[in-house]
Length: 469
Image 1 (cartoon, one colour):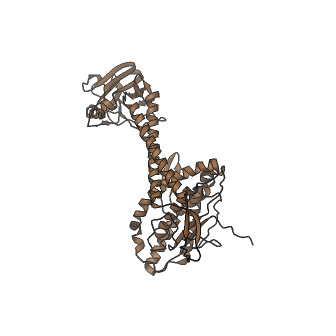
Image 2 (spheres, rainbow, N blue to C red):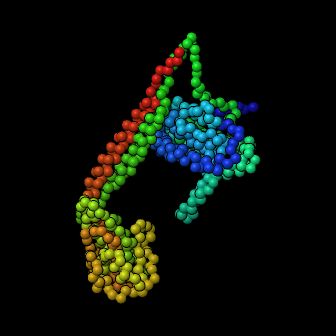
Image 3 (cartoon, rainbow, N blue to C red):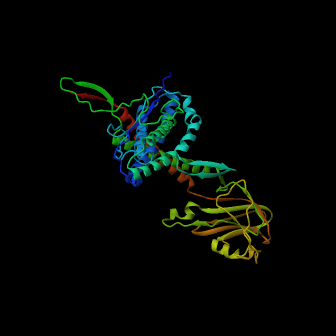
């Protein structure tokens, strides 16, 4: 008879007696502090997993300090799930700790891998794990179905949630937790945790397609830390790592937040610098030219809201400078910009199309709103702050200022059917300075994040001499 191999991720749990009939109804409220802390811990988990990815890729080793931190996050999450709506199998409040707690009824242990495949790390967390992700989706709930390019998101409760709810109802009416249901829930949770560890790069052993039910895995044991008492006649000396203290965990969390913030700032600074240096035309940072047409009498932009108060350097004219609208069409065109209320009054009973703020490149034909023809040609109105009309390319520029503004393109004779190619731009005189500022602040935050994370990992890995007498 073949021996069943013990997977390097071991999940253990004990169903406690005397569970409250009603406490499970409010555990969602009681675990909020844990969810708050875990949000930060999982942020650090993701970032440290990225660092571990590159370490494995280049050295074949998972940094020990990062490994223990990430195992601790999984362990903490498992305790919270067991207490709340992953099992409801204990009423003992979960400890705020990454460490293994011997007296708590659930445990998680993952063997540290001395060597990991440098090639496998490239594909195991996304490609190889896909079959397991499908199963985990059924267990945990939630799915996305794509139909003709549109995403229909179906968020629902998974098997674990359903069975936990059943266990809660049975507990309320009978005062007991069905052992068979507990065993099945442990099997499902064990499957999820194994996949999480594999996707987190903590092992190269592929998760088995095997439902190991029950609180204890067959043939597996977990090494729980114990307080060893020695007598004066039997002194002991050893070396162990410091592990993750509260200060080290806090340092990693803040370091991760600083690092992730820096990525956003550096990306924004890079884009701003790119736009300032490569997208200027005639002194204006200019959008790509796009074609638009509508079987109506006008094409109007969504209202452009500009409101800024404070010192001169934060006013629109300082940040945006002058704006420019440039259009080209086969017919004689009118192009103008005016306050939105004046444009709406002029086009109140007119059929026109609205140019949305977000424009899809693959669809330039704009639907028309119902209405008739304008009573007057647009050039006859005097509310435009900038306007031009004629054939060929028409360009208007104006000084940006506070208010609600709309840009309008029409045929000069106010006839139906408007078609043109156009682009917009702004001087953005301080864009280069903003880009440099974002890059500098992002670089400083990145440096702080690296120092905080590096110092915490080094401290967690630092060996200390332990002596008991």
